[in-house]
Image (cartoon, rainbow, N blue to C red; front, top):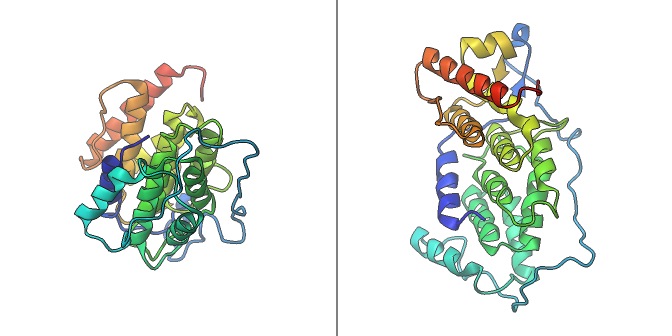
Length: 280
């Protein structure tokens, strides 16, 4: 499980990006002012509700309520609360319901991030279930300053001890680059990263495409992506995941020159092909 502090840092990093839904178009369509969403609300799959017959966490601790004022406490106070959440026992039903509502509320992104961090720190079956349901709702957040809550959810689930029970690797792969991916670039990136770290190598082409994003090489090979204004975080996160799985120093710097970025992207592509000779 990712500890609260790294997850909080991840949330802080992703909130610096300007977030809009991601769409992909052919090069001939790249000059259109208005492009359709990658996944419309009517096309998105319905939210999955998980039922686990006979499954339960092994620890039998008394239910506990959310820390008082968790939505508005100072950052230092909230950080201290995160450190004790998993030691106090499982949240009660009312607390889980409050956190679920917070995750779904587009009007309070900071509270949504705190809800995701609390669920990650809780590290229970039901907490993982709620985070997974949130991701599978494929909720676009064009008006939010960031998709940090969903990114935190994906990052935690990739480290969950219940990954196989909940079929998390396959679900993250579908959210990253399946028939109906998540509509936001940052969330797709983190889902792809988690899926790759969990052994789902089919997401590697998507991550490699991210490293080519916003370059002449990418335009020539992948067509134009109508994407967020700032893609530095996603491109860097993708490259780091590929390098980590390959076991090599990352040759890609997201803030480098176009030529250096293209060189780094090609180096990662060559390293992946060499390590996976039977894969396309």
